[in-house]
Image 1 (tube, rainbow, N blue to C red):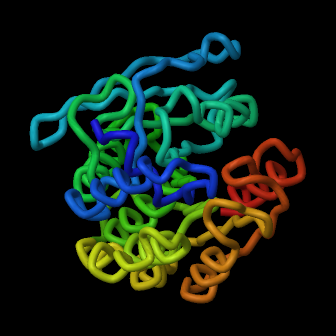
Image 2 (cartoon, rainbow, N blue to C red; image 1 turned 180 degrees about the vertical axis):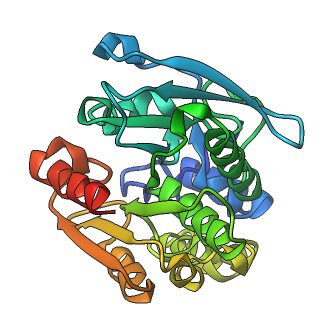
Length: 292
């Protein structure tokens, strides 16, 4: 599991942080490079779907490189309109992100969500390549299930999950995989792994000198701006809050500009990854799903 020390990437250190902690953080950055900074997992179970009166099934998936991934299948209430494959953000695990999708079964959508390696009950330790592998493992399991036959499949990724989902969707479309994705929703997503690493490292005096050498430890094939156009002709919805304090608004704008048609931009006004506390934003997503 990644240590807690390098969590500088998506949450810049406070000016009140002791100098010793900052120095330790910088040393960890130099030792490990940037990849581990995108992941902040834990093993705590915060809530389970039954606490929200949701039916669910625990699913365990085996990856090709020997890890076991924990996931949840949440069936739709009534006849399903479609299935949502949800990829969560960089912190904690699926149990802390559940509320972001707990409203969808009542709207007629199955939900499938996985924990990347190192998160929750999943084995291993996270890194970018491994998380990308895990996201594809989950999608392949999902598309093999009878419960989703003859129903549209949509991908919803938040923050880190959006960056992983963007890459996965691009590759899925370019390889002409079946079944086809019917839509991709990216909520509060950064425009590229290397780009956000450099941006966050440059925002603080201690890590400013490290922005170039450390960001270059991330392979450039992970930049979402280079891949999002390849998702077309699958419809893309970009959601980003004008007051997102973690992933600045310009990342959503850049992704929208780079995306191919058909595409839609939803500007929101909530904290990072808190989109679905507002009923109107839920309605906008439901309209996108039903239209596609």
